[in-house]
Length: 92
Image (tube, rainbow, N blue to C red; front, side, top):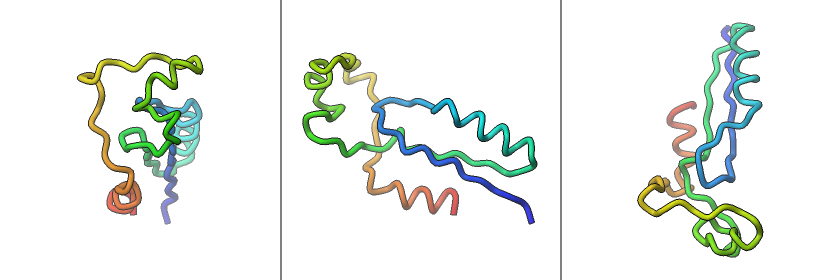
């Protein structure tokens, strides 16, 4: 029986970012013969409190965050209601 591992990263950032532990864990698993897959939530909408929503950049700027990039550079995010369905479809 082959061993498998799914690395799931529940991202809260409003941009793509791979956590530093991800390549390390995947490398260890692969070196031991495990099949690896990776799933993160970077490309899904986030449910933040209204005041700290990525869509409310002025609130983020006031607490020391970065100013958002222009709208045309933003990605189209999938509604977060599809996370479970996509996870099951692609990795189930």
